[in-house]
Length: 477
Ligand code: NDP
Image 1: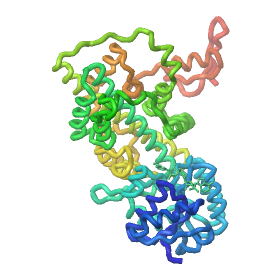
Image 2 (image 1 turned 135 degrees about the vertical axis):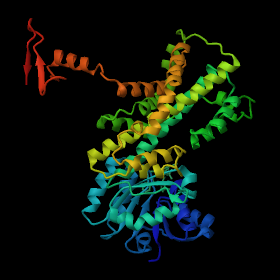
Image 3 (image 1 turned 135 degrees about the horizontal axis):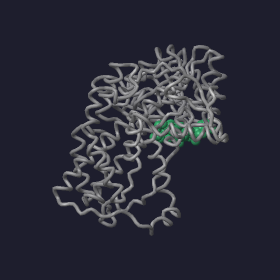
């Protein structure tokens, strides 16, 4: 036994992670259900480091140093269970299995509990950065036991992305915490992409800029507080011209957004936890609405808003307002994601360092952004920070942004440009800052039709009003 770690499942992600480990000097046992993938990895990339190819599960397990470290990179779901069934029986107490796939965190909790009974550490690790990140440095979000991170941490921190010399890997929390945080990362990614897309649509439809001009605007924004990977690639996509037609690429792509389910899962889970991730939800629904051709055809003939002709200087002023609205909405979307993680940490008893989560999202992953460094600082300064907006610097920025933010949202309504995520973010802001919410009336309605009771602002306890009786007396319950 000589391998420091083994990787089974050698499609794009597993293959690149195995190469990443090998390039960093680790001896890597490699295995795949279909042996051809194992052979091709060693043939094509064998000179990048030391690989130990294994044909059978037994051979693979025997190649690993003890305690064994075995990473599974197969399709999430039934494939993961199939591989676990095959390998777990060959392992011994103290061995570690890392699931680097996109597992549902509830599955990870179940698998962890089952393997713990046999003394095997099961580590659900969220891995972000796609194919390229897996090879050159992903953001790694491992859950599982602290003991397992003591062994695996140094390896993860070696192969992960680094920002300012700091690794983009940290122990997130026990059992499914890592996969949960990866899921929310993807939810935030949906919101961020939708917000950027809405900003583009506004600059196009209201300010009448061309895609190439908007690419230039995004490049300028990328030098400021909005600096991020997603803004950077947006400028690339917008400046691309379709080779066949000579038209802007943005105009030849069908406007129906796809999804692989991670945004949806974030929203489904948020509903269970009671976490109001409205920007993430709107971003997910916006993709769904874009992919409903019959519904869109039914609405298309209906009247829209009024065109607003803008002079060049008005367009420039509007662009600056959109930057403010985008930034403010983005702060809200990220804040919603972090709050959802806090809600889950409470529900599942995960001891999560929120500052550290922001820290490992600064590099390697899709939402990597300059302002995550500030989110990190804010959460590090106050581990119990309920919201970024409770931190003076963010509060000041949002205060400065709010007039233009409202102006942009009002313009979109008048002009008839859809901005579900901008609008949801602003409504969320106004909901939470309100002195009194109409939730009081909802409680009244619920008590009227369902005797669901209510609480009062002036007395302790629960109350019910006998609505059917003419004098409507109130009972203290
Ligand atoms: P795929 O999700 O396409 O999975 C293919 C791999 O799974 C192959 O190695 C395949 O083996 C194996 N497999 C499928 N079914 C079984 C089974 N029943 N028993 C054993 N092996 C099986 O590969 P990716 O590399 O794209 O992704 C791997 C994991 O990483 C997934 O969970 C994915 O969600 C996650 N992920 C992917 C990212 C990406 O950008 N692609 C980013 C981050 C995470 P065989 O060759 O024999 O068919």
